[in-house]
Length: 88
Image (cartoon, rainbow, N blue to C red; front, side, top):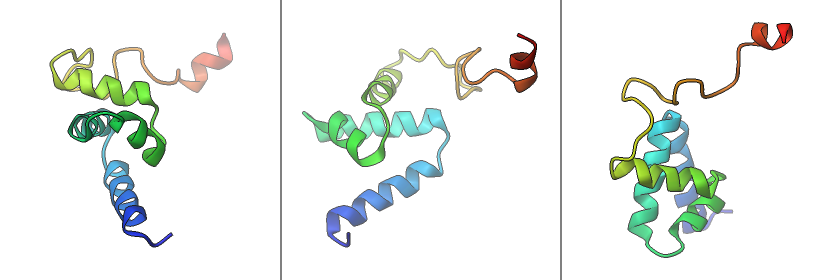
């Protein structure tokens, strides 16, 4: 699609792809707040990011951040190492 809306969607997704998880969450949270009612659902459709992830980004912006500044995820978050999975 070559509409102006499709161009904006591509730009947004290009920017998000250059960010780590934490910063992408926060950017989406900020954009959703700026868009107002329905912003979370619309951004979720455009980006493929879950609504709960965008909501978490909004929470992090007001100070409820469970992720330390020097980390992208909370301790223990993400996949376990492959070696650990094989032994269990």
